[in-house]
Image 1 (tube, rainbow, N blue to C red):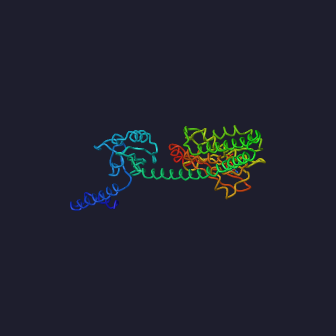
Image 2: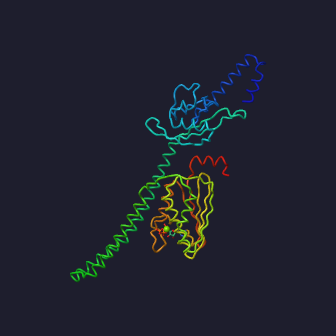
Image 3: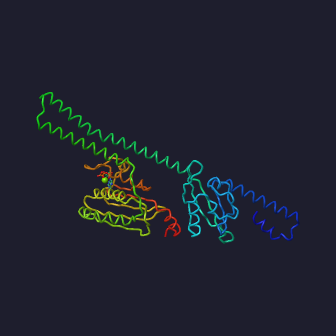
Length: 387
Ligand SMILES: Nc1ncnc2c1ncn2[C@@H]1O[C@H](COP(=O)(O)OP(=O)(O)OP(=O)(O)O)[C@@H](O)[C@H]1O
Ligand SMILES: [Mg+2]
């Protein structure tokens, strides 16, 4: 159709008035069709020229984003009522930055809605003739994510509650038994000698301490963490950790290796918590290599995440246990609390990250942690083509 219209325009001087009328009708029809398509799209679309003046606004746009009424010849950021979006667009479009799915929270009527803004160049005849701004409403998607997170939290709380119930059974049973023994002895002897009374009381106070420990650990596991996020270097954090653990590693005859991707930018993290989480993983690795071994930490970028592989060549984990190791109180150690990896999981999730593992019995284990890269850095890396 486009080709036909172009050809007809070239021959315009030779066309009869009737043919010209037909051509205009055709153009009007095509224009109307395009308007209908653009207006019925779910995403909002704004087109500007190279001076950032608005050339087109789709109907959906006005529903998604409050705009000033008169739009004739007005510059994009003067028309958008929301200051955050207007200022952001002015700064970044003028600088020629790539804007890809940038998220904004805006007040729309009584509710809050979440929009993503993407800006693409408007290319005509191989030349940039302006910008195309695409707005997407992701409020429902966000709500579903929050719902999913809540469900996940509830599920983990149920597992945790079940584990706590199981945990407190033993000390309670032991306290019950010892109280019964005391009662029996009291009945039999009608008094308790000092030694046996103090023996019973020692046991009771030990069990109370155990119960207290369980409650304290439980509270740590369920309470929201007061994370203080700041941009920090992941590679530096690992270096500091090895500096801190090197004597202990030496004692266990464990050598350590690091392989860092220096391109990893600073990441939003609570250094104190993340350090504790990584330390828990390193301690587990040490315990899995009682006769020495190699502990290797590799950092790299994958997609929109910074990743860490922490690999040991220790005992490995059986397939059956692999499903349980993040569960609270699961331990195969005589003196383990079984909360080390529960804390790790919680800290990583709090950072918006993921943790997974790969293990083979007798060969070793790799824990992989991925943490989201800051939005801006993701774009830079995209542009560099991941090189
Ligand atoms: N690198 C590893 N190699 C082999 N087994 C591991 C490794 N990491 C974890 N595990 C297994 O997972 C279990 C749970 O680990 P977790 O850190 O949660 O508790 P724990 O180490 O037993 O006790 P705590 O950390 O409280 O001292 C461990 O008991 C162990 O069986
Ligand atoms: Mg542990």
